[in-house]
Each structure stands twice: as C-alpha cells, then as structure tokens.
Length: 219
Image 1 (tube, rainbow, N blue to C red):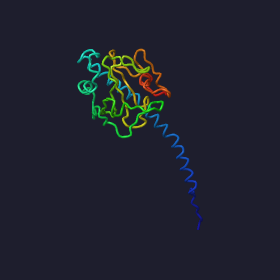
Image 2: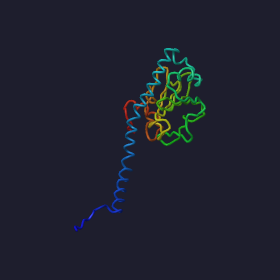
Image 3: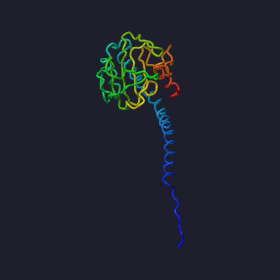
Image 4: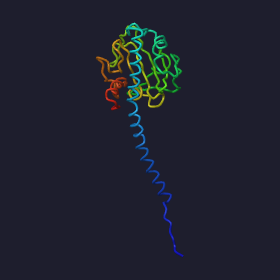
C-alpha cells in the first residue's frame, strides 16, 4: 500500500497565526471606525445647524424681531416656539431625564462639561434622528458673550449629533449654535468670533464653525 502523509498546521502554528491576525485587527479596526465616524459627523452637524437656522427664520416671520422673543424664559420660548419646529421624540424640558446615568460630556482639553445634565435651567430633548439637544444661556437683551466663540448671543443650542454614544466630546460629536438678532451662527462663526477654542488646550466649542467650513474633522 502507498504511504500517504497528510500535511496540516500544528496547534502552535495556528495560535501564532491567530495572534498575528489579532494584532493587525487591533491596530486597524479602531482607525477604520474613527475614519467612518469622522465621515458621518460633518453632515450631521450641518443638518443640526440648518434645523436651528430654518426654525429661527420661520419664527422671525411669525413673531417678529428676535430681540422681542422671551429669551429670559427658556421653557416658554421652547414650548411655544421652537419645539413645534423640531421633530421631537422625547422632551425632558428642564428635568434632565433625557440622558442616561453616567453620561458625562468632555471638553477637548479633558474638562467636564455639564450643560447636558439636569440643573442650571437647561432645556433638553431628543429628535427623531437620534440627536440629543440642550438649550440654555438665554439672555433677554441678546448681549451674551463667551470666550472667542459667542457674541451678541440670545440663546444657544447645543447638540450631541450621535446621542449618548461615545466619545461625547465637544468638537468631536458635540457642537453648538448661537441665536443672535442677526441670525444663527455656529460657535466660532459669528462676526468677530473665531475658532481658537478648537484645540487640545481649548474646550472645543469653536470646532463647530470649523467643521462646517472644512467639512471634516482635522484636529
């Protein structure tokens, strides 16, 4: 009879191969995920911006000059004016119930940002596209200024474009827009404003104007 030998991988060779595949996957998959997320974020930011801008334009034609709106009463402003313009699936108003326990947004510099949590009068809601919103900083005279990214502010809309999913970071998946007497501007994009806060040493809010302008995350 003819002696036939069957060649096969040894257990050690198989384990080494699996280890190599695991190392390659660990190195490449996070990068692919990051690239995919970065491609989807800019269109979401632009959509959020257009939503606030369109609503504000419609409200101006219905209620008159922006400076006459009740910015000193955020709940009244939202309930009666803005909320009907949004496709809202969950409205928590100021009770903080829209966000799960442990949700803690971070600034680019690593500091905590508490706007999306309950308290401080922030008005929160969720829209059908999965975006999480927080509205606050109402100023009855539309003269609110903060850092380099807000001037002549009446009230600001902040949005986590992918909801509670990570990274929950300003300038990465959390962005902001300011309603002013002259229109709605992305943080950092108003006249006399700049995006200097869009850096590892800044809070990241100025990245809103930058991502709309560049159409990508380049920081």
